[in-house]
Image (tube, rainbow, N blue to C red; front, side, top):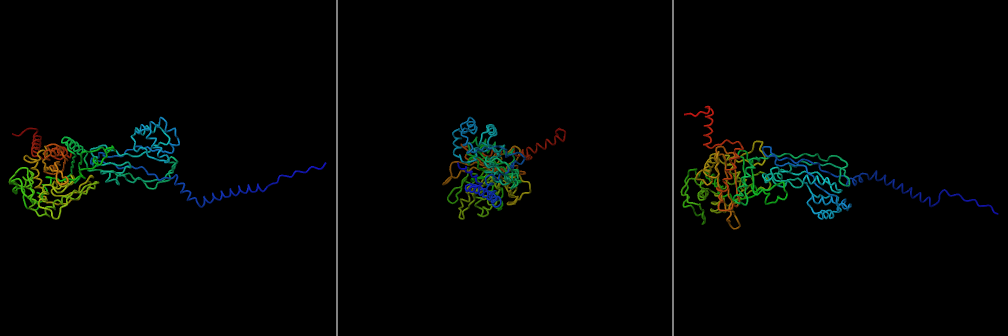
Amino acid sequence: MGQARKPKGIPLCTGRYVITVSVFVLAFVAILGRAAYLQIYESNKLSIEADKRSVRVKGIDTRRGVIYDRNGIELARSIPVESLWVDPKKIIDSPSLMHSVDWKKLATVLEMKESELTRFIKERSTKRFVWLKRKLHPEQAQFIHRLSLDGVYLQQEQRRYYPTAEINSHVVGFTGIDSNGLEGLEKAFNDLLIGNPGQKKVVVDLYRNVIENKGIINDAKNGEDLVLSLDSRIQALAYRELKAAVLRHGARAGSLVILDIDTGEVLAMVNQPSYNPNRGDQRKPQLTRNRAVTDMFEPGSTAKPFTVLTSLEAKSVKPNTLISTGPGKFRVDNQWVRDGVNLGTVTVTKILQKSSNVGVAKLALALDDQTFLDTFYKLGFGLDTGSGFPGESSGRLSIRHNWSQFEKATMAYGYGFQVTPLQLAQAYAIIGSKGVKRPVSFLKVREPISEERIFSKESTEQVLQMMETVVKEGGTATGAALESYRTAGKTGTARKAIKGGYGDEYLSFFAGISPVSNPKIAMVVMLDEPEGDVYYGGDVAAPIYSNVAEQALRLLNIVPDKETLQTAHSSNTLLANNGGRKNG
């Protein structure tokens, strides 16, 4: 029997083993080399790419400035609210969520149908951030917070709140969903009110939650507060009286403006119809525009004092100069200028008191064109007032080079050019200030204001005295007379211009100044298309002036200047000094 063969030992390595180990070693070296390369040479690029996916620039919340009236009453303030956003992708990844009872509750609290809400999410299934509803009511936000749904989140924002609602809406205006001013002084002073929101870098997770703050880029700065020239007490009074008059006369619209004669400040400015700026559904253009600043109209007889002032400045007449207006009409360029009645030969003062078209037309035709027009240019017609209010109209004063004598005659009594209520109020304030023009301001004036004398003190004082006869017995505006204060003013009733001429609708005005002894306020009242047979300015607009001016002057602590009251005041003082005993 042969000797058994001795088994060979297992070799320490084989070709396959060497290849396998080599592959793993090479792979490890490649990975290590790649890692080293990325860490050393590509680190900045990788950091940038990572930051694109997780680092965000986030705004720093700031407070929009508060708007106050001249007495410190808040007219606009920002309050914290919560807005709702969703992550559609996360919601789609949890299909049971959209069939749950809580999903139905969410739709209900948002005043949506469940199917509508579900469709909204599915149409945006690939997105990670979508606003669902901005600036929720606090009760809505609280309810949604309790639901605690995955993919449904609340984020704090700010909402603008207007405590006085409709009363100041046309002046203050409102902000949009992004808290930027869209109308009124909110828009005019948006850059001042909004401040600087600031920015910071943050690291966010997949659901936009901040997990790390990487520092501030720009410092945040709160918006500055704004103090307006408005007096809320007078504003509320004017709003109430104008609204009542518009409803009483069935007017299409109305405006009222009060200026402080000494400073040019707007003490009150209201319009009808109005709107509530706290309600987005009421922000319609026909409601939100400030008619007192944007709408133009032919001023009618309220322009007659300017023609008389021009004649006085030119020294062509005096208040007691006699002018023949008989037989109540006269022909100019084959057209007639007419009065309602034949006044005969009357003084210039009587022309204003009785509102004679014939009288002022003759005064205008006796002046050269440039002298006549200069007064209207000086008053600021054809230019905006410079108040800075958004959308302010400049009116229309475009005189043709070869205009006719009839056009000149009709311009004397307020036709052929257009003004805004604010422009007309400023013109009357110039008469009240004895010929000094001051800029219009919607902000409270704290520093000395610029002023320019454009008419003589003597002429404007004469016009003021003549205008006082308009509200006295025998004038066209006895309804504008005040109980405690002397008043000067002028009525106006103008046909509304339509294509091709004038229609059957009227604009009714009264422009006035009080008190005459020391003028403090100038006011313009305008009603658009009052219904019925009562449409004259003396019947429709003058009583509004009386109701508002009387109380406004008392609120401003202006001393009464009517002689009867002054006499009574003197008698009471004398009685007090004598221990209450009468002399006799």
